[in-house]
Length: 232
Image 1 (cartoon, rainbow, N blue to C red):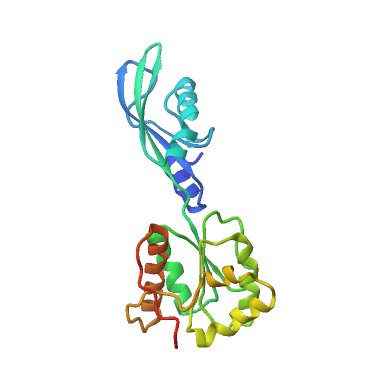
Image 2: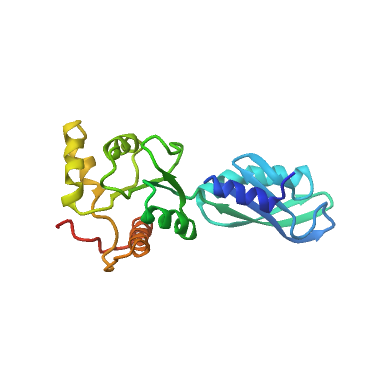
């Protein structure tokens, strides 16, 4: 059986929403101990225990509400032999970042994205990504890719929160025209950010990846990022 910590890491890597319950205080002599943990998803126990089935059931009853609130809560659960105080901590599903094309920029993005809370996937081809992504961000890093339009057609129905194309409009404009020719709604096309990345004067692949990642954080957190000009 995996430990609670191992199962938590595995679930978070898969982008799942979970709640971690931890015993922080005992009153009397309940069948538990400080530090006991139970990992939950909805009303399902994934790993660990708070000490007895009564405590575990009580925590599972509260798990969904804690997930919906998005904020930690402290609860007291009682037993004939005493009570426990439990800290219930929700872990939100991390958004997915699909990065198309195996370029130096893409590899830097995939390497750094987990550090700022994204689950990154490198997709070398249009079909080479997991569509069960929840909140989704998409960046295509090669404006010369022959299947770029196909890749965008695959992801647009998933309603990504963000879609970006590396390259100026001079290099990417014909791809947008191809989408128009295929009947893609103008409002959808208008949401495609190109060029992509904040205007930090980036030159190297790593600097460009940094500018893109900073822009994604700005979108996710509602910050005001200064995108690069669409001209040129």
